[in-house]
Every structure is written in C-alpha cells, then in structure tokens.
Image (cartoon, rainbow, N blue to C red; front, side):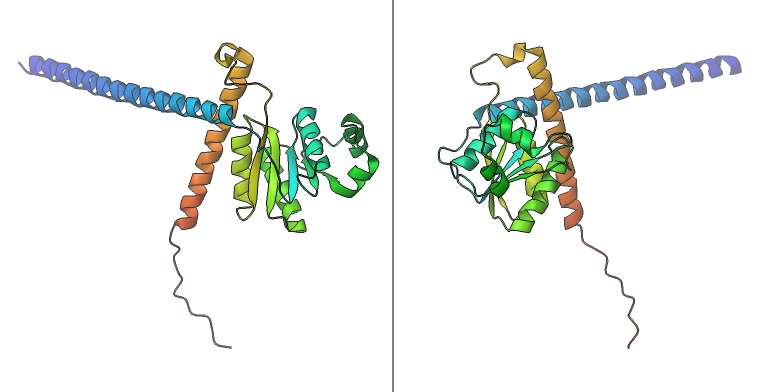
Length: 231
C-alpha cells in the first residue's frame, strides 16, 4: 500500500509539473505573439512615416548639417548652401581619408564657397557621434535653427539623436529620397527591406534609451541630511 501511495504521489507530481510547464509555454507564446504584433505594427507605422517625409518647399535655417552616407546627401547639402537656405554647412562623419578638396571637386563647388562656409567633421562614426559633433558645432556658433540632410529612412533616428543632444535647437528635416516607398513595392526587395528593418530596430533601441533617460531624470533624488561644517 505504501508503494502504491508513493507511485500515486509521483504521478500526481508529474501531472502538476506538466500542467505548470504547459501554462508557462502558453504564456510565453502569448507574450511572444504580442511582442511580434507590436513590432510589426510599429514597423509599418515607421515605414509609413518615412514614406511620407518630404523636403520643405522653401527651406530656410541658420545653418545646414549633412549626415554622411553617400554623395547624394552631400550634393544636396551643398546645393542648399548655394541657394542661401543656410549660412554655413557642416558635413558630419566624413571618413578621415577624405579631404575637403575631394568633396569640393565631387560637388563641383568653388574654393571660395568651401573656404568661407563649409566645415568638415571627421570625428563621428555613427548617428550618436553625428549628434555630438553637430551639437558642439551649433554651440560654438550659436545657431538656433538647422536643416538636417540625410536619407528619408535615416531621418527619424537622426532627429531623435540631435534633439537629445541639443533640445534647445530647432532641427528641420530635409530628407533625401533614394527610394520612393509610396510608389515602389519595397516589401519585395530583400535588400531594401533589410535596410528598413535594421533602421527601425536601431530607432526603437534609441527611443527606448531616450525614454529610460527621461525616466531617470524625472526620478526624485535623495537629499542628504548631512550638514556642512561652518566656516
């Protein structure tokens, strides 16, 4: 009888363990599906936002910043400078081996224009670095409004990083449209879909970091009750 009772206890324990495991797996599945649904919904909203970005019809600001990643962006930034959309241009994140003279020749610009009004930044290696480099440049010159030239899919994260670095500055998006997301079926293009997904993932991480930073700044600080000795 004792052996039979032990066997029943072990069987009941196995049933409880299997039931607990099924509950855990079921909850994990629902969490995973919910997370995947949120990711897809956020991605589609991100893609729609990027597809809707258009350059302003009459761009005007104190200065212009180009975030490098292709000469099409630089060409656009230099053209904006030539037309008087801004007083000065920063090309941020230029490869250390690339000189201002090479950029001037590639954009078919005059030596006088580059000498008076173009700055080349070699320090930044990513978007966060672009924001740091641009922030110092803006601070040194006291600009209040800046046109930001970069690819349309790169614009949301660029503005997020720039506004975090310089919240008091007005950043105006001037997107360079390499691919028209509205008219092209980009979902069937594996390379472009991969690029958009990667950029959305980076933007999501940057947004979470920004949110976490805001919460930590708003957290009440403990005030020490220790008195300073009288002088």
